[in-house]
Image 1 (cartoon, each protein chain N blue to C red):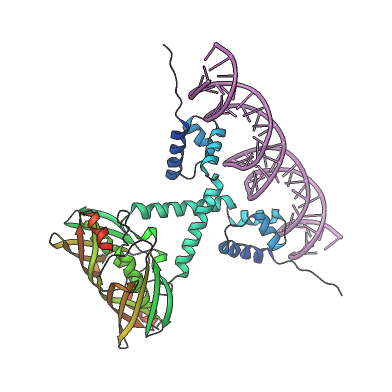
Image 2 (image 1 turned 90 degrees about the vertical axis):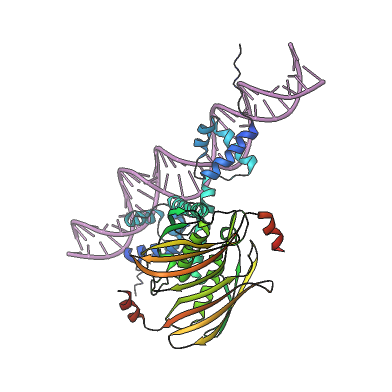
Length: 198
Length: 198
DNA sequence: TACTTAATTAGTACCAGATACTAAAAATAG
DNA sequence: CTATTTTTAGTATCTGGTACTAATTAAGTA
C-alpha cells in the first residue's frame, strides 16, 4: 500500500490565499507559508501571479483609505457634496450611492442616507452658530439604487429668529425620489445651549 | 558683524513635528529630517520623547481602524446595537454617540444619526424580504450629546399587508429626546421590485 | 573664561518583511 | 522515460526603522 500525500492544487491554494487575505489582510508571507505548509517563495510566487501586493502596501492603502475617509468626514459637515449654496436661501448637494449605503439584497439605499443628505443640507443652509433639526416630515417617493446620483435641493420657505422651515426635494435624473419639510432651530449663543443641556 | 543662525528651539520643532504628522502621517523620518533641516537621529529622538511610533506602526493602526470600521459597517445592518427584537412587534436599540457623530463646536449629535438609529430599527422590525421607509414624521425634543447612550424603542402600531406603521421613541436616561412615526413599505417579492425600478 | 550640561549628529550592528534573481529539486503530465 | 510545471533554496539588496555608543556642537552658568 502506497500512501500518496497529494498536495492540494495550485489553483485551490491560490483561491484559499485570496479568501484568507480577505479575512485577514494583516498576515505576512511567512505566516501564510506556515498556514499552507509551503515555502515562503511559493507564497510569493502566488502573490505575484495574483497581483496581490505585499503586506506593507496592503496596510498602506487601507490606512490611506481610512485617512481620507476620516478626513472627509471631518471636512464634510454635509453628507453629499455641496454644489451650490446661498446661505439662508437655497442649496444643492449631490450624493452618489455607494455599496455601503445599500441593502445587500435589493441594492436599494437605506432611507437614512437619503434623509442624512437632506438633513445635512438643510442644516448647512442656516447661517448661524448653531443649527439643529427640530422637526421633519418626510416622504420617500421611490427607492434609490446603488450608483445613482442623488441631487437634493433645499430652499428656505419661512424664517423667524428662532426657527427656519426648509423644503428639500431630492431627485435622480429629474425624477422626484424624496421630499421633506424640515424645521431647524437656530441660535448664535453657544452658552445658552450649554445651560439648557441640564 | 556676526550672523548668528539661531536654530529653532527644540520645543518649537517638536510642536511642528506633531502638527506635521497630523497633517500627513505617512511621512518617513528621512523626509522629516529634510523638512526640519536636522539629522535623522534628531527626528528619532524627538519621536521618542513625544512617544510617536514609527511610520509602519502608524500605518498599521490606521489600517486596522479602517478595517474594523468597514467590517462593523458591514456587519451592522442597523445603526446602534439591537438589544431586543420581537419581529413585527417591538424592538430596542442602543447607540452611544461618538466623536464622528457630533458637531465640532457644540458636541451635539447630528440629527440624522438619531434618525438613522430609529429608521434602522423600524426597518429591522419588519419580518419581510423587503422593508423600505416610505414616510416619516419626526421630532427632535432635545439635543443629544457626545458619549450619551441613546436608547430607541420601536413598536408596530398598525399593519396592513403592504405597509406598517411604527412608532419610535428615543430616550437618554429615560428622558424623551426624539419621537417619530414611520410608515414602512413591506414586500416579499424581490422580482416585482426590480421591475418597478424601471 | 573655563566648566558643565543639553542638544545634536555620526556611525555601527541588527531587525522585519519584503523584491529580484538564479539554480536546483520535486512533482506531474504526456 | 522525458519534458514541463511547480516548488524550494539561497543569495544579494532594499526600506524604514530600533538600539546603542561616541563624538561634536551649542548654550548656560559660576
